[in-house]
Image (cartoon, rainbow, N blue to C red):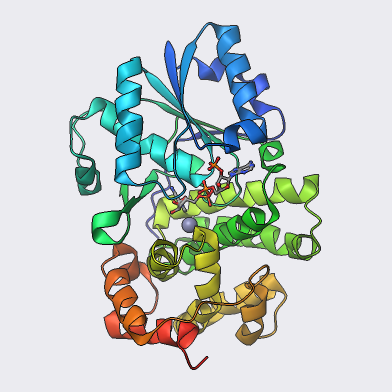
Length: 368
Ligand code: NAP
Ligand code: ZN
């Protein structure tokens, strides 16, 4: 067996980790706090971070305009703001959107480049150091090198990666997710599950990654009854954030596969959240790959406590009123966009544009 397992993020997990580890904030003299409009304040993370910075005499500026599914224009604005402040390190607070935006802002701060060139993954200079404070349990972006951005000119999302985009330190405190609306809690849990599942199924999977993926899937599955009952207690919040971190660690090594490639159009054109978009594809994805990975499929069904993949449709539909119906033209357009994502090649069953079109029709076609 050959394997490379690099997890360079110093992950501090648990209640109160920010106040307990203030020394880890000494990454510069002037911090740029990157966040969305509400999440940092509502979660309580912002006040904790500012308290630590003040106690250390580190000054800070706040860019709190990160959009959901941030665009190139949005990160350019953040980058200009950071440069005007003279920021020398970045603290990202929020869900995957602010965390990913922060990675792009950190790259543009030290590399004089057009934002669209981020996706070439070629950087001359080391990025500004990043501290990540997640306030959702889904993307695992706090432990991944990926930054996923919306590119309007391409009508989709693209991601970039670099060894410098890993946060130096991640403070994963489940208490910061208590303020999440129920729908975001459910959708992000499905996103975390999709990372674990796709990594487990990826052609790049390895035994160490697999063991982490199964551990994460078990933890989420163990929470599903409570989530369905709306019982998002401390224990559930803790398990979800733990699984989200594990999901991030797994995709940091394998990347995602077909679910993410197909989900982007459901977010771009139909405004479904990232996690919900993935959830709607999950059961069909398992059906598609069953013949390639019969043993792994059995493991996942056992973890979920399901006898058959047909039961998975309901399992991944919690909180969904009804799936959208896509026209034939939409299915064709979405397939054309999905097949261009590099992650498609990491799918266990090799698929082309026609197969992806047929999958969209099967899941979202008018005759369903
Ligand atoms: P998000 O877009 O960051 O946040 C969704 C919504 O939840 C926002 O309105 C946000 O408010 C709110 N929110 C977040 N935390 C909150 C809290 N504690 N209390 C109250 N409201 C809160 O959602 P996400 O699912 O975490 O991130 C999705 C993005 O991550 C997508 O762009 C996706 O493509 C990307 N992603 C990245 C990776 C990676 O490895 N880098 C992996 C998967 C997905 P605000 O507007 O105030 O922020
Ligand atoms: Zn995701």
